Length: 610
Image (cartoon, rainbow, N blue to C red; front, side, top):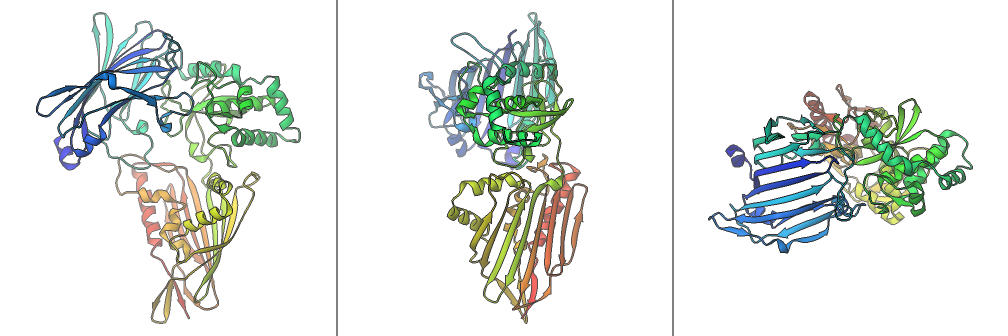
């Protein structure tokens, strides 16, 4: 532990984090947590100028029981609890999505290095869902308890202990992930007590593109939900009454599909209506917000809703059109472990092609793109809500060749100017991004945005921009620009060195930005947003210069990574394939080799002669 504090500087450390929890027959629980925080440097005195705790009206409660500061000289300062303030949490913490998470905070006096903050918090309610009126609490799955506890952090933890009191009528099961957590079971005064703890936990290094902390940190999942089939049945019970199409939904579906003939045309029409026309905004209509989609008719009339509402409405419309569609839940940005518990944070649509064979649609995150499902959701775990129940499944990956971007550049080199044309054909992953840019910017702002893409080039100017209708989903988005720029020549004797656009580091990073975060060594997996193929061709023409040499062929072929750089005539071709989303262990070495190959291409030049 001392070694870590010498090698690294931490603004604070957790001396002790102790939790005692007990749950009840209805699945609700009471939890008491007591924490000791030691301030290690001046930065920590500012980071801990206040203490925050969170709760969600209609769902749960949280209350400070005491707060005190132990000064380095032994003085103990008790902080008055009447100074607690209560406000809406920031949007990224759910404050304005739909259930209105709130923050309670208590301002602390000026801290000094070496001070210890000691405070206790009491939580009550369901895992998420809590009080309605004065006394009623609910959980996501009534009658069942489940929770997730993390045992690591980016700062040292001297001791973390979690104790849960088991209910005999509904015993728990648990599973530990991503490392070791100590465990013992005791019987005290007739009660079964489960104790989990870790001592001297070293701080974890922050690594970009490594996924969620829930994917990598030591964690404990506790549940008494019997199986995923039971969760699937419950999700069906929750959602079904609100998504089964009524006469209003059926009439609307008939009207919107009156000119569509084929099944594929109908599916596309309904998907784009929900994804593009129903804005993402929370509705508060019931006493069970957060898990249950609102009635499809209400969402349609309001023309707004969050993921559960958009998914529920699309299911309803598809059913009204005669398709077998189901509500489904998944985890965006987190891995759902195959252990039945509440781990989902997003809702999708499962369109059944054959018995238990699905196409997945995301009318929320997929909004504004050609694809039903953004490629970065591929590989996620998903649970379909069915009356008979279903198992936890994985969204399959599409082929690498279907995702990425194709770029062709033609540059005509003159002594004092370069005139060129750049054409971009997007595929999965880039289609949605560029449609959004072109759809939401005025022409002059669009020029400014694209010019910024090429700010690394000297006196780069855009003459014209041509692009397809951003609402035309018959093919992936395409655009082209005519440009001019000032040549940057490096003269050596009678030869001139010229750098084409695709040899500029900044240009490649516009489309493969992840390479900036590839280090030689890392602890956690390296996660691309999606597997992809990037192909760039640049053709060089000149009446004022003779092209003496382009680049010869270079190739890197790995199990999951491919790189190729070659010239054909006066054209240079660069191709990069990332054939997997997550790289770890020996596979990560391939990514590091790829980075080095790409870096070498940044040093290439074309040789010209007058």
